Image 1 (cartoon, helix red, strand yellow):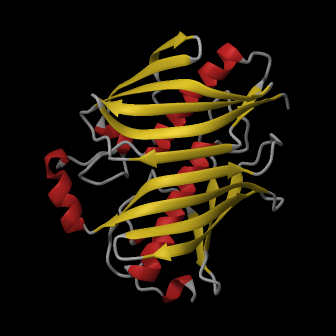
Image 2 (cartoon, helix red, strand yellow):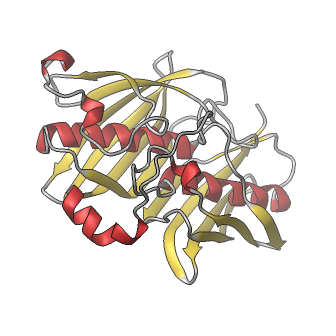
Length: 287
């Protein structure tokens, strides 16, 4: 099926919008997959490129939700909440590549759940990341019923994408193999495009903040490397963190895997409630 044969644009089937959704060149394929391209707009200064793990998760989760929406809920917009992602970095090579290619293929499609297998590929056709992403699917009526108290009526319009110019963790405190960091109160302007009238901090941004905490732990305990990559990341989201809520991060080195690789376990919390948790490996590289 060609893209122009659909009555709606594919990216209009889901609730995430620009500037959070910046996928381009969406194409459906006969094998049931969908491809797109994306221009990398952010990478942490400590992370080895061409794209950070959290950003790969961001774009693949969006692309996967589009193919699920097209195959199962075609013509009806739904919320696709990524509840678990397993990302594997397939190369230790650190390089620059501004535009990357993405592919996602559905592996499970049900009324309220879905899953995809995705990959991020360089312009030289080198697979950089693979990802398995699982979703909770909610109709607008059900979503509104659960989250009506977080609804806002004033639209958010930033002059610059909040995903390019990001707020970092503050008050990072180190205690040996443990660390804490404060994100503070989530602002609606930091959530533009995710979601309209219900601004919530994207899980991909939470993943990037986990990375910040982990990189700080790594540099403190394993010095001597110019860049850090994440060979494996497993992240779970238990609920959304909406504007007006205060988010803090706690993490620790849970295992030393080798002289250049550690495993970090961390949680993002609103009060005493866990919003998301992660287990990820960090490896030092000297490109």
